[in-house]
Image (cartoon, rainbow, N blue to C red; front, side, top):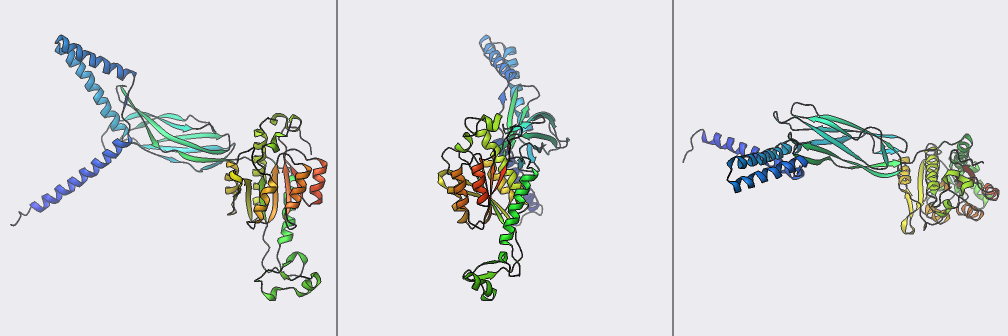
Length: 440
């Protein structure tokens, strides 16, 4: 049976209309699922109670006027619910932050953008938008503001600034909005932007010219050891390794030394640097009021925080002179934690943001052997709060002859400790707390 000419066109239009309605229905259902049900305000509860009371009293007293007034109040509440949903459900938000990592003392900035309904008609409302800021930040600007949303209003922009106060991983957000109906009867508090993690890395402390010279000197010595060229100089030879080409063997030097040595034929490369941070609590509890003045605390937490700042300062200074910087600490469970194996300073700073002082941590000399197992060579910088003569001797013996060592401390070490380190080829770097009165 042949269909009329316009039937197929009508069917196509009906199918298109049905698909559009289905799409809008799914979108509305998704908006309704993520939008919480409105909660009555104090005024809303009063209106609901009065409306129910009027209806009940009117039914008992058979007074139609009271029943009508009560129904009118309840209808007003229902209209408020509908209008709150119409405003809150289509709201969309986004967060734009230039960085997800900030330094202690820097200002974290972000921009929140809110968009309302895209329909040409709809209510225009003023909303309260609030950003959640944790204790690691101190708000520089207000974390909440009133913004206007409507169909003919451009997207609302809300800028937030917060000062980073403490290192670590923190969460910014969620961004929530508060929607009220025009009558002030109902309220919707809805998150529009999910929370995001922000890493606060340690700040740097000023290194004196002597400290900078110690770092540069250690790196230069390392470069002399690993420097590679084409002459027969001793610094450009290394012992023969299985697989090295025979043509690279320096026969004269091999005969003189009694062992096969080969020439280095590649260009000079900067050394690698290992920063070993002592996370033992006892290393910082031993610092008294005479050493650190205002930083003398029973738990050693404040002194350890300054040691973390020293480690970050050394890492930043070495990153410009070495090919790779690796942070090594003692992790939970007796494992050695390596951060920055890819060679990036950012990874090291993020690792310093995570470290915590512990009472059950191993000594640095117990951690350093695991470093050699990962083929990390070059310079070793140990950051600690207090170093004894026994620990200094263990540090010197735990590093190979091809590695240069730096001991970075908060307080000046004893002359005996300094003498042991000097004889072992180590350099001593003292970074006291500003205003603590520590002398070199």
